[in-house]
Amino acid sequence: MNTIIFQRTGLRCAVLTAALTLGGTLAAPAWAAAPNATAPAQTTQANKSAVVDEDVTMFDVVPGTTYLNGGVGQASEERMHKDAHHWPLRMTFSTKSSNEFVADVKLKVFDHSGRAVLRLKDAGPMTYVQLPQGDYRITAAYKGDTLTRDVHIGPKGMDANFHWVM
Image (cartoon, rainbow, N blue to C red):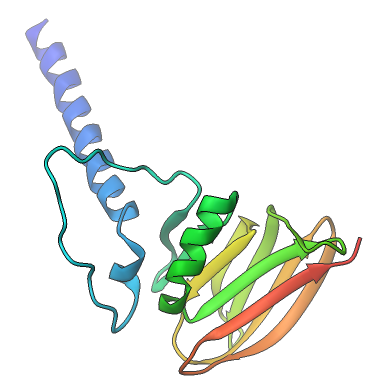
């Protein structure tokens, strides 16, 4: 009986360790992934509560490609705009004449040789990507309508806006 309990406990510890390690990786701040960015000043306080940001997700999808996806709600949109200068490729997705943001965009980004560097099945309404300078092709599909853009990311980055008229 003790062996079974030990095995379960060992498995639980392994799963917990893996989850905490992965969670730490996923929770890396945006400035950590940005080239030539400086870390914000350390202003930790023992009694300050942690803020969890569920609207913004950042993680590696394709080896070497990191992205930030979010912008749902005014607070999330403002945070993403504030951090935009750290991201070379900045995409927004909207529809209707009022420029209403949309999500659930099927997004693919290809490098100049046609190799996929990012694939998302539910991007938007704002997606920022860490990519080196160069030429890329972006395809974004929303409700069956696909838009394609050829873009060049230069030293100041690139804003690519996708707008569907429905």
